[in-house]
Image (cartoon, rainbow, N blue to C red; front, top):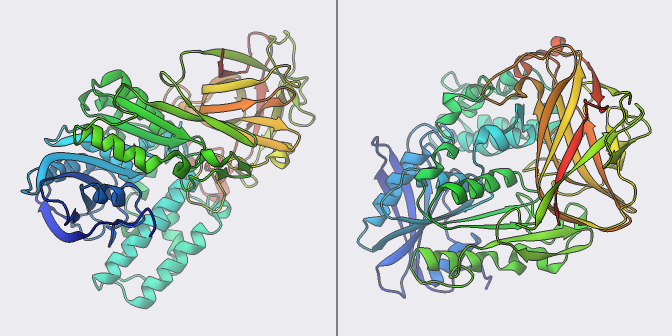
Length: 591
């Protein structure tokens, strides 16, 4: 029997209960029959459908065997739950109502923990902000924080691969099935709609250049004969409302947990991966709650992607110990819930904060335990981008020494119809594979500037955030800059971490600032990394203006998601790195 299948007998019951506004929400409850109630309860709220059994769901089977009740709930407008699906708008209050309902069941101890990854991770944080009676602990895995900053969008740009696959493969496909079950679509129309979804998501590099992006659902379903009472907007209900609000404001604040971290008073186990779509969101949740919540917060980071927790990620293998199974991720979850939901302290949670990350390196790595993240024994080092104006052709240098006064700028042309292709990274759910992939071919393009160190005399261990500070000029009314840090070895150039900044949002996502003629400073958050580069190898920073389909290629207009094909234009870019116009990257290193 698989370790993900419960060994003890259990009973299954379906219920509905009312959200605070009277909407019926559907739950499926699994309870062990060999253990007498009351039970501590673990809850997952999901937009992806309640499972028929708890098999293959990580901690669920283990929790049932250990005497917990395990509950899955369809979020509003998904599965068998009523109401309209509006992503994350109702999740705080709906989640709180469900927790309080479960805590009040006669078979419950009154204490509830939450578990799950991705969207089922995000809803935990939102529910915890409501401080519902009965919530004892949360374990958000691969969970975003502010969706406008580091998940579906990032510093002004759209995280297009994630946005497209989630919106069409997950949400639209499920909506079609719901409409079919309700008799509002016939079989032929449902099949045609699914075919249209597959066509749009099977070639994301083409779809992300299909403009205007704000009208994409209408074009994806243009050849499907939908009934009069069903529109393309009904299939992807959030698309226009999200893309019509590129600037952070009240709409995005309504389901952003970060301002409410101080209201969360329960322990958290935060789990992510270095090549994971929600890496920065998970780290933000951990850091924010560590600083503003009185409850203990714990952090685990493996060398994983959003869909791969094995020891082989991308083109690299990190050794048998690197996998989530080898680490014992589900046993760790159970120990966490035993400690905080059952009040039965177990290692490693009985003696303070657990912070453990996997230090990756080409061909291996190891788990390391820290006092915090980043570790206390790290420092910040600034490196300068240097060249003779040839970084886009012959490459430049990444050096510790400041540049001279008259170093010429590096120049390239950004062509939105031929963007720099995505080569690995923290991706999710699309036709471009996540993780470390050799990017030598990408770095040879004439619209990519590279800056490489000499062979390192001593190895360096990166352990914490990486940032770039770039001085750019463009002849377009708006543009992007993408920065990637990579490990250069004899076998290839493997990206470690990267980021993007849309120029109009250089002073924050909450305000657009026109792009002037002349140089501007663009700060790029390149996320975190824990990686060892050995002596003799090199570090490289690559700078470009696109990374597609991970991000939407900027069309060179003021409103990029509204731009038509005829409005798309190239942009002439210049990256400065002379004295008083230094372009730099700052890395966090072990002392």
